[in-house]
Image (cartoon, rainbow, N blue to C red; front, side, top):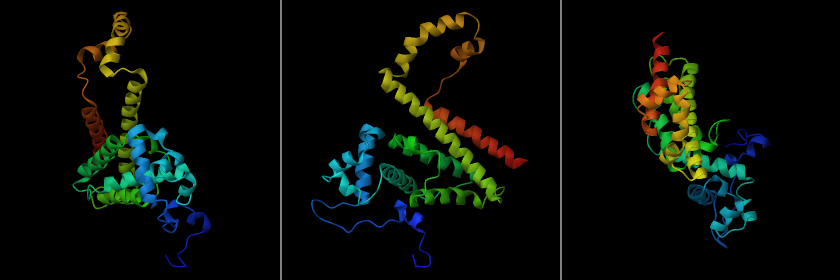
Length: 245
């Protein structure tokens, strides 16, 4: 970056443009990459609540004050972790196919990342992530539709990608909530259903819930994978209907 392109001081403070300290071999080599890898390993093993600068430092045989030379806050560490996962998503290669295939690929990459790193979904939503890998993923997502018929308007591209991402985040948050409920109650889904079934039978027997009775009697109750794909199909069908107008 040239002197003319140098960002204002407030922008230069962002973790993405802040230089790392000079390498110091003792008591052990350290870098943002090693810090992030250690933090991700902790989160994968024990959840996001287990991540702190003190615990990450202990994993690297470094005090938390030494980590502050590489990042300023835990929030910056979380941003770096999210960006590392976006980097893993990008490693799957270019987003190819027609617009439906491209959007389905985007959705599935996010879901696979959330399956591998269960904490990842808790850091999505809200403001856009601005790390280089996150920006590369967003660029690839938007570019995948930019040459497609019906997506000449950039607002239409943003709407389609945003609708799919909103659906994915909502579906993954629901799945994560179910998993947390299992952990907190100590019962898996089948055990919980067996425990609550007598009560549900009594309520249905009152005749006040005929549609719920039909759900219990006739619904197929597919796996979470099937539910996710069917819900995504509904979103894509809605986009297709909008394009056909």
